[in-house]
Length: 289
Ligand SMILES: [Zn+2]
Image 1 (cartoon, rainbow, N blue to C red):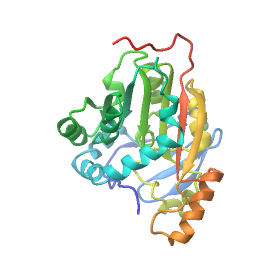
Image 2: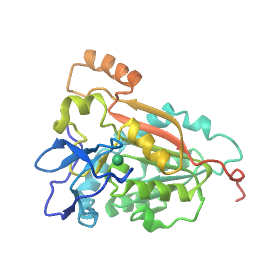
Image 3: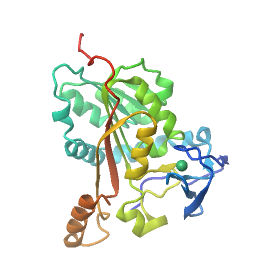
Image 4: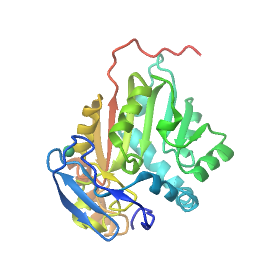
Protein backbone atom coordinates (compact mmCIF):
# COMPACT_ATOMS: atom_id res chain seq x y z
CA UNK A 1 0.00 0.00 0.00
CA UNK A 2 1.17 3.51 -0.81
CA UNK A 3 1.68 6.22 1.76
CA UNK A 4 -1.22 8.67 1.88
CA UNK A 5 -0.89 11.27 -0.85
CA UNK A 6 -3.13 13.88 -2.32
CA UNK A 7 -3.95 13.74 -6.01
CA UNK A 8 -2.14 16.63 -7.65
CA UNK A 9 -4.43 19.42 -8.77
CA UNK A 10 -3.38 22.57 -10.51
CA UNK A 11 -0.29 23.45 -8.52
CA UNK A 12 2.18 25.72 -10.22
CA UNK A 13 5.58 24.10 -10.64
CA UNK A 14 9.07 25.21 -11.54
CA UNK A 15 12.47 23.82 -12.44
CA UNK A 16 14.88 23.99 -9.49
CA UNK A 17 18.61 23.34 -8.99
CA UNK A 18 19.87 20.57 -6.70
CA UNK A 19 19.23 21.52 -3.08
CA UNK A 20 22.59 20.17 -1.83
CA UNK A 21 25.12 21.20 -4.49
CA UNK A 22 23.26 23.68 -6.69
CA UNK A 23 23.89 21.48 -9.75
CA UNK A 24 21.53 21.58 -12.73
CA UNK A 25 22.56 18.38 -14.49
CA UNK A 26 20.35 15.42 -13.66
CA UNK A 27 18.61 12.39 -15.12
CA UNK A 28 15.04 11.23 -14.69
CA UNK A 29 14.65 8.22 -12.42
CA UNK A 30 10.93 7.93 -11.60
CA UNK A 31 8.09 9.19 -13.78
CA UNK A 32 4.34 9.03 -13.46
CA UNK A 33 1.35 11.19 -14.30
CA UNK A 34 1.71 12.78 -10.85
CA UNK A 35 5.46 13.51 -10.65
CA UNK A 36 8.94 13.38 -12.17
CA UNK A 37 11.84 12.56 -9.86
CA UNK A 38 15.40 13.24 -11.02
CA UNK A 39 18.81 12.31 -9.61
CA UNK A 40 21.47 15.04 -9.50
CA UNK A 41 24.42 14.04 -11.71
CA UNK A 42 26.87 15.70 -9.33
CA UNK A 43 25.84 14.63 -5.81
CA UNK A 44 23.11 12.01 -6.31
CA UNK A 45 20.24 13.82 -4.56
CA UNK A 46 16.80 12.68 -5.79
CA UNK A 47 14.03 15.25 -5.97
CA UNK A 48 10.91 16.21 -7.87
CA UNK A 49 11.78 18.39 -10.83
CA UNK A 50 9.85 20.32 -11.97
CA UNK A 51 8.74 20.82 -8.40
CA UNK A 52 5.30 22.05 -7.29
CA UNK A 53 5.35 25.46 -5.58
CA UNK A 54 4.97 24.99 -1.83
CA UNK A 55 2.38 27.76 -1.36
CA UNK A 56 0.10 25.68 -3.55
CA UNK A 57 0.97 22.43 -1.73
CA UNK A 58 0.16 23.67 1.77
CA UNK A 59 -3.56 23.21 1.20
CA UNK A 60 -2.96 19.45 1.04
CA UNK A 61 -2.32 19.32 4.78
CA UNK A 62 -5.94 19.70 5.87
CA UNK A 63 -8.79 17.58 7.22
CA UNK A 64 -8.04 14.47 5.10
CA UNK A 65 -4.40 14.55 6.14
CA UNK A 66 -5.42 14.84 9.79
CA UNK A 67 -7.71 11.82 9.49
CA UNK A 68 -4.84 9.79 7.98
CA UNK A 69 -2.49 10.87 10.79
CA UNK A 70 -5.08 10.08 13.45
CA UNK A 71 -5.86 6.63 11.99
CA UNK A 72 -2.17 5.75 11.98
CA UNK A 73 -0.91 7.52 15.09
CA UNK A 74 -0.32 4.34 17.13
CA UNK A 75 1.54 2.69 14.29
CA UNK A 76 3.73 5.73 13.56
CA UNK A 77 4.43 6.21 17.26
CA UNK A 78 5.51 2.59 17.62
CA UNK A 79 7.94 2.96 14.68
CA UNK A 80 9.38 6.20 16.08
CA UNK A 81 9.99 4.52 19.45
CA UNK A 82 11.77 1.61 17.75
CA UNK A 83 13.91 4.13 15.85
CA UNK A 84 14.92 5.96 19.02
CA UNK A 85 15.80 2.62 20.60
CA UNK A 86 17.97 1.68 17.61
CA UNK A 87 20.16 4.75 18.10
CA UNK A 88 20.30 4.29 21.91
CA UNK A 89 18.63 7.67 22.27
CA UNK A 90 17.71 7.38 25.94
CA UNK A 91 21.18 6.24 26.98
CA UNK A 92 22.82 9.03 24.99
CA UNK A 93 20.64 11.74 26.52
CA UNK A 94 20.74 10.56 30.11
CA UNK A 95 23.62 12.87 31.18
CA UNK A 96 22.33 14.98 34.10
CA UNK A 97 23.73 18.28 32.78
CA UNK A 98 21.55 18.18 29.68
CA UNK A 99 18.43 20.31 29.65
CA UNK A 100 15.61 17.93 28.80
CA UNK A 101 13.84 19.84 26.07
CA UNK A 102 12.55 17.89 23.09
CA UNK A 103 11.23 19.49 19.90
CA UNK A 104 9.30 17.36 17.41
CA UNK A 105 8.85 19.06 14.03
CA UNK A 106 5.91 17.63 12.10
CA UNK A 107 4.60 16.22 15.37
CA UNK A 108 1.13 15.42 13.90
CA UNK A 109 -1.30 14.60 16.73
CA UNK A 110 1.49 14.64 19.31
CA UNK A 111 1.65 11.02 20.46
CA UNK A 112 5.46 10.95 20.63
CA UNK A 113 5.50 14.27 22.50
CA UNK A 114 3.08 12.89 25.08
CA UNK A 115 5.32 9.87 25.58
CA UNK A 116 8.44 12.02 25.96
CA UNK A 117 6.66 14.24 28.47
CA UNK A 118 5.83 11.14 30.52
CA UNK A 119 9.55 10.33 30.49
CA UNK A 120 10.33 13.70 32.06
CA UNK A 121 11.06 15.84 29.01
CA UNK A 122 9.79 19.36 28.43
CA UNK A 123 8.20 19.01 25.01
CA UNK A 124 7.23 21.31 22.18
CA UNK A 125 5.90 20.57 18.71
CA UNK A 126 5.54 22.22 15.33
CA UNK A 127 2.83 21.09 12.92
CA UNK A 128 1.64 22.56 9.64
CA UNK A 129 -1.68 20.67 9.60
CA UNK A 130 -3.98 22.78 11.77
CA UNK A 131 -6.43 19.95 12.49
CA UNK A 132 -3.66 17.59 13.70
CA UNK A 133 -2.05 20.28 15.87
CA UNK A 134 -5.37 21.30 17.42
CA UNK A 135 -6.07 17.66 18.25
CA UNK A 136 -2.74 17.44 20.13
CA UNK A 137 -3.31 20.76 21.89
CA UNK A 138 -6.85 19.89 22.95
CA UNK A 139 -6.61 16.17 23.73
CA UNK A 140 -3.05 16.04 25.06
CA UNK A 141 -2.59 19.58 26.39
CA UNK A 142 0.57 19.98 24.32
CA UNK A 143 2.43 23.10 23.27
CA UNK A 144 2.29 22.90 19.47
CA UNK A 145 3.09 25.77 17.12
CA UNK A 146 0.81 25.70 14.06
CA UNK A 147 2.82 26.52 10.94
CA UNK A 148 6.34 25.87 9.65
CA UNK A 149 9.53 25.68 11.70
CA UNK A 150 10.76 28.93 10.17
CA UNK A 151 7.55 30.70 11.18
CA UNK A 152 7.93 29.45 14.78
CA UNK A 153 11.13 31.54 15.08
CA UNK A 154 12.55 29.77 18.15
CA UNK A 155 15.53 31.49 19.87
CA UNK A 156 19.12 30.45 19.01
CA UNK A 157 20.50 27.34 20.77
CA UNK A 158 17.25 26.59 22.57
CA UNK A 159 16.89 22.79 22.18
CA UNK A 160 19.26 19.92 23.05
CA UNK A 161 17.20 17.59 20.82
CA UNK A 162 15.25 18.21 17.60
CA UNK A 163 13.44 15.22 16.10
CA UNK A 164 11.60 14.97 12.79
CA UNK A 165 10.18 11.78 11.38
CA UNK A 166 8.74 11.58 7.85
CA UNK A 167 8.89 15.33 7.52
CA UNK A 168 12.01 16.28 5.55
CA UNK A 169 10.74 14.60 2.35
CA UNK A 170 7.81 17.10 2.38
CA UNK A 171 9.93 20.24 2.94
CA UNK A 172 10.48 22.47 -0.12
CA UNK A 173 14.00 23.67 0.84
CA UNK A 174 15.62 20.95 3.01
CA UNK A 175 18.96 22.77 3.18
CA UNK A 176 17.38 25.91 4.66
CA UNK A 177 15.46 23.66 7.05
CA UNK A 178 18.61 21.88 8.31
CA UNK A 179 20.30 25.25 8.80
CA UNK A 180 17.32 26.53 10.80
CA UNK A 181 17.40 23.38 12.97
CA UNK A 182 21.11 23.92 13.53
CA UNK A 183 20.48 27.51 14.62
CA UNK A 184 17.96 26.50 17.29
CA UNK A 185 19.99 23.48 18.49
CA UNK A 186 22.18 23.91 21.56
CA UNK A 187 25.91 23.30 20.94
CA UNK A 188 26.41 19.54 21.08
CA UNK A 189 22.66 19.06 20.56
CA UNK A 190 21.22 16.08 18.70
CA UNK A 191 19.14 15.94 15.58
CA UNK A 192 17.18 12.76 14.76
CA UNK A 193 15.95 12.42 11.17
CA UNK A 194 13.78 9.62 9.75
CA UNK A 195 12.83 9.52 6.06
CA UNK A 196 12.14 6.99 3.24
CA UNK A 197 15.27 5.45 1.69
CA UNK A 198 15.41 5.84 -2.13
CA UNK A 199 18.30 3.35 -2.22
CA UNK A 200 16.35 0.75 -0.23
CA UNK A 201 15.26 -2.65 -1.49
CA UNK A 202 11.60 -1.67 -1.93
CA UNK A 203 12.43 1.50 -3.87
CA UNK A 204 14.63 -0.51 -6.23
CA UNK A 205 12.09 -3.30 -6.68
CA UNK A 206 8.89 -1.30 -6.98
CA UNK A 207 10.14 1.96 -8.56
CA UNK A 208 7.05 4.11 -9.38
CA UNK A 209 4.91 1.67 -7.36
CA UNK A 210 7.11 2.13 -4.25
CA UNK A 211 4.89 3.38 -1.42
CA UNK A 212 7.06 6.48 -0.93
CA UNK A 213 7.16 7.50 -4.61
CA UNK A 214 4.28 9.95 -4.26
CA UNK A 215 3.53 13.52 -5.26
CA UNK A 216 3.63 14.79 -1.65
CA UNK A 217 7.31 13.82 -1.33
CA UNK A 218 9.53 16.53 -2.81
CA UNK A 219 12.96 15.04 -1.96
CA UNK A 220 13.81 11.35 -1.55
CA UNK A 221 17.03 10.86 0.41
CA UNK A 222 19.34 7.88 0.71
CA UNK A 223 21.87 7.18 3.45
CA UNK A 224 24.52 8.80 1.29
CA UNK A 225 22.62 11.98 0.33
CA UNK A 226 21.24 12.51 3.82
CA UNK A 227 24.75 12.31 5.26
CA UNK A 228 25.95 14.66 2.53
CA UNK A 229 23.21 17.16 3.36
CA UNK A 230 24.03 17.02 7.09
CA UNK A 231 27.74 17.57 6.39
CA UNK A 232 26.92 20.50 4.08
CA UNK A 233 24.86 22.17 6.81
CA UNK A 234 27.42 21.77 9.58
CA UNK A 235 26.52 18.61 11.49
CA UNK A 236 28.59 15.63 12.63
CA UNK A 237 26.87 12.38 11.69
CA UNK A 238 27.01 9.89 14.58
CA UNK A 239 24.94 6.96 13.37
CA UNK A 240 22.92 5.81 10.36
CA UNK A 241 20.52 2.88 10.35
CA UNK A 242 17.93 1.58 7.89
CA UNK A 243 15.09 -0.83 8.46
CA UNK A 244 12.15 -2.52 6.76
CA UNK A 245 12.91 -4.80 3.81
CA UNK A 246 9.53 -5.69 2.33
CA UNK A 247 6.07 -4.19 2.80
CA UNK A 248 3.71 -6.04 5.15
CA UNK A 249 1.44 -8.37 3.18
CA UNK A 250 3.54 -8.21 -0.02
CA UNK A 251 5.14 -11.61 0.68
CA UNK A 252 4.61 -14.43 3.24
CA UNK A 253 6.02 -13.75 6.71
CA UNK A 254 8.54 -16.59 6.25
CA UNK A 255 10.08 -14.59 3.41
CA UNK A 256 9.59 -11.13 4.89
CA UNK A 257 11.42 -11.71 8.18
CA UNK A 258 14.79 -12.88 6.79
CA UNK A 259 14.67 -10.25 4.01
CA UNK A 260 13.97 -7.51 6.57
CA UNK A 261 16.87 -8.73 8.67
CA UNK A 262 19.26 -8.77 5.71
CA UNK A 263 18.07 -5.39 4.41
CA UNK A 264 18.79 -3.85 7.79
CA UNK A 265 22.19 -5.49 8.06
CA UNK A 266 23.16 -4.42 4.54
CA UNK A 267 21.69 -0.91 4.81
CA UNK A 268 18.96 -1.53 2.20
CA UNK A 269 16.04 -0.92 4.55
CA UNK A 270 13.02 1.04 3.40
CA UNK A 271 13.50 3.86 5.88
CA UNK A 272 16.73 5.61 6.86
CA UNK A 273 17.37 7.12 10.27
CA UNK A 274 20.30 9.41 10.99
CA UNK A 275 21.49 10.69 14.33
CA UNK A 276 23.73 13.75 14.05
CA UNK A 277 24.88 16.51 16.29
CA UNK A 278 25.73 20.18 16.16
CA UNK A 279 29.43 20.58 16.99
CA UNK A 280 30.10 21.29 20.63
CA UNK A 281 31.91 24.60 20.40
CA UNK A 282 30.54 26.22 23.52
CA UNK A 283 30.01 25.03 27.11
CA UNK A 284 27.41 22.30 27.62
CA UNK A 285 23.82 23.41 27.92
CA UNK A 286 23.22 23.58 31.68
CA UNK A 287 19.74 23.25 33.13
CA UNK A 288 18.99 26.30 35.23
CA UNK A 289 15.19 26.35 35.45
ZN1 LIG B 1 23.55 17.83 -6.34
